Length: 268
Image (cartoon, rainbow, N blue to C red; front, side):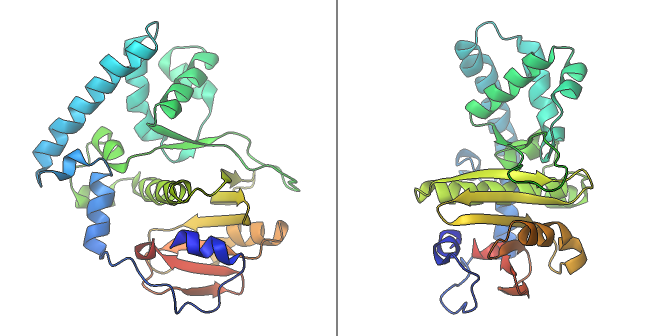
């Protein structure tokens, strides 16, 4: 469905051909909570999922990573993996991470490269092309699987997840990862970024490719006010984008304003 939006290359005004995926809110929440690895879905058992994820992390750390990087400090990298859960969805300052781990800044950068290269972490560079405002040039990133993130945060049910401070970052990261994976699966050539100014205006995801420049804002809530969308509205105006997309849990697909399209997550 998201690929269909990009093929239009203009702000859609006729939504008749676009329909939801058929998943209901409970299914979406289950997927969000448990993540996308297939094995935890074999049995509908929280205990099985917990044991499988523990085994996966141990295998990843003790077999795969140490075979690829035999000189890696195992204890430091293990601590780094646990830190990623708190860093997921945030602006990354390599010096702060290095200070916390007790390693050098280049080593901290190398850890992020390893995590990104082994498909645990998704690196989002800043979008700073033709900027007329002061841009935050630090990268952003997130754990690519929400189930793995929730395991590190000890969140094993929906109530705990919805009450956790990381809930918003978790939802945002899950949505962004699904968008990027869909476009990759369709063979679309594109780059992805995050955008944030020193004044705090931000856009969760910026896509740039054969379809042009497209800013995307992700919200968990159903009703999103225009005031909450100031960052993406400013971006659309500054970069003369044909339109921007807001992904929320609103049940209706439609226009937020003349250049913002609301897309329910269920449509993805």
